[in-house]
Image (cartoon, rainbow, N blue to C red):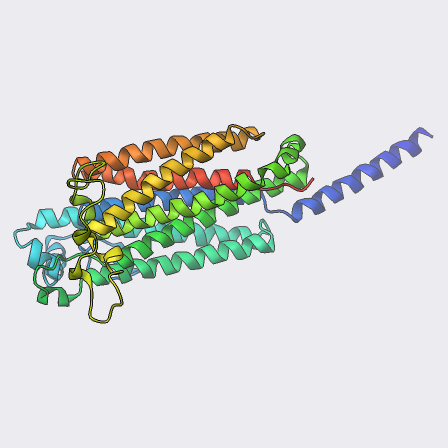
Length: 395
C-alpha cells in the first residue's frame, strides 16, 4: 500500500514538473529582460554623449560614414593631417574654425568618433546576444519579433545620424549670407526622437518580460493585481499616458531649441525681454516666411525666439500637469510600486525644471545643458515606469 502511494506521488510530481516546464517555455526567460535593460542603459548613454557631441560642436568633425574602416581612428601624424584636410573642405571650418589647430581638431574628432563607436557597440550588443537567445529558445515568438523590430530601428537610427550630419556638410551654406554651419534642426530632432523611441521600446519589452514571467510562475502579488484592476484607476491610467505624450513633445521642442541654438537668446526667467511673452513682431517675424507659405507657421520651427518660447511653455505645462497628477494620485488606492513611480516622476520634474532654468540663465554651459538633456530622458523613464506599473494584470 505504501509503495502504491509512493508511486502515485512520484507520478504526480513528474506530471506537475512537466506542466511547469511547459508553462515556462511559453514565457521569455528573465535573462532576456536584463539584457534589454542593459541595452536601454547604453541607449541612454549614447543620448547623453550625443548631446555632449553637439554642445562641443564636434558633430561635423568626421565628414565620411564608413561602417567598418571608420572604427579605426587616425594613428600617425600623417593620417591626422589627412583627416584634418577633409574637415577643412567643409563650411564649419571655412566659416567658423579657420584658426583651429590640429590638436583642437583631435579633440572634437574624438567626441564624434566616440559617439559613433558607442552606436556600433549598441548594434552588436543587440544583434549578437539576440541571435543567441532566439536560437536557444529563450524568447517567445512575440518577444523575438519585438527585439527584431528594435534592431531594425537601430539600423534606421544609424542612417538618421548620418542624414543629420550631411545637412551640416552642405556646401550651399557657403553661399548664404550670415549662415551658421550646423545640422538641420529638423533632422536633429528626428534623430533624437528615434533614439527616444528605441529606448522606450526596449524598456517596455524588458518590463513586460519580467511581469509575464511572474504571472506565469504565480509569483505576481495577487493583492497588487486586484488593486490594479480597480476601475477607479482608469482615469489615472489614461492621464499617465497623456503625460507621456506631453513629456515627449516637450523633449522634441528641446531638440528644436538645440538645433537652432535658441537657448543662447533671452537668458532670463520667467521673462523674455520686458515681458513673459516676447513681442509679437519677434514671435511671428516675416523673416522666416517663404513666398509659398500660407501664414507664418514656419516661425514655430525656424524662429529661435518662437522655438524657445514654445519650449518654455511646454516645459511649464509639463511641470504644472505633473504636479496636478501627483496631487490626484494622493487620493487613489495605489500599489506601492505605482506610488513610487509617481513620486519619482514628481521629483524628476522638479530636478528637470531646475536644470532647464539654470541652463538658460547661465548661457547654456556644457555641463548643465548635458544634464538637462539627460534629465529629459530620466523624466520620460519615470513616466514609462508609471505607465507599465499601472497596467492591468489578469487574475
